[in-house]
Image (cartoon, rainbow, N blue to C red; front, side):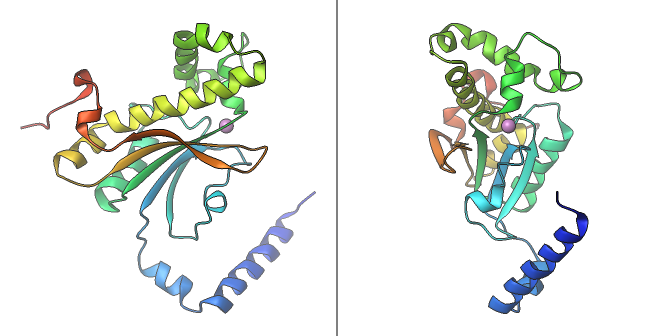
Length: 212
Ligand code: CO
């Protein structure tokens, strides 16, 4: 069992070790943050954003929720995207899922889990669309893992279809959305080769002209 004091001690050692390497590190960060990446990932404790990609404090702007879902009615996630794109002007948005995601697995089961069912509903809809293809896979684990990939691909589209991202492209701002997935079993983070970096990659029905 860990207690709070252990975490406080860990923190003191961590801050001290960074200070030893670069005495100006925290002073520089306190003045401003200039991350080039927005990470949208799962809340799962086994998927720590900065550690996985070897980034220091200040390098990643981060939003995490259960099953890395991007909904067009979620003010929390949309606010993070808006601040990252409009104010911080990140160059890349990394939507990162992970294999064996419990949220994705829950959305594929025939049982209630409570409030979370509503949050995961769009993944259940996605599973319904892909149910025949997914059912071809031999094991439950393989089926969940495939849905984890399909979920990332869907969320990349959802990010790219926001008016926030579209307006950045209308302004000529360089911005790319990437789909990635992390393996809890091997620690490897890989690209799903799903990249959207302009309006021409969006289906016509989702391309929106700015107001005015
Ligand atoms: Co997860």
